[in-house]
Image (cartoon, rainbow, N blue to C red):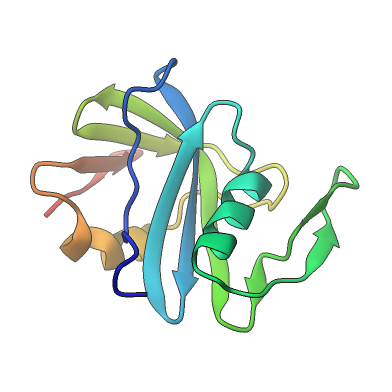
Length: 130
């Protein structure tokens, strides 16, 4: 898992917003984003496949098969929308309708050592940066 990026931030999206997920995998924090048409269940599935982590399917509130939010070696702890304020400045808000969770501030605190220099992630009035 050491060769997998901890954080994947937006890069040249069509719109200035999209989706994000926050996951602990093997007790390590990870952050992934996707463009506006990426649903949280799709982001989680892609992340779990990337990490070769096994997961069970559940029915989400919309009766759609989705990866379970918690498995043997992972846990989805945050999900919502991400807005691109500038190249290195991002705002997190909202909650996932499928998983009923929003931005997780503890997880963001755990990500600070891995944030690229100069990158800021905002949740409300709080700013997370190295």
